[in-house]
Length: 69
Image (tube, rainbow, N blue to C red):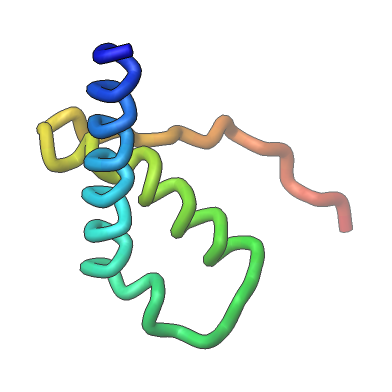
């Protein structure tokens, strides 16, 4: 019981830090909604706190083939 309360508090703190990071980057200040902006906002909320502890996650895109003409 005590473990679940502690875990819940930690998750809420994690998400609050993520929302703070998204606000600092200005993700909530635009009125344009797109899948890209929504994806960036959600990723920042869930993964953003890692930047504050020094992990600095990065996603590398593989070399994609060029479209045919």
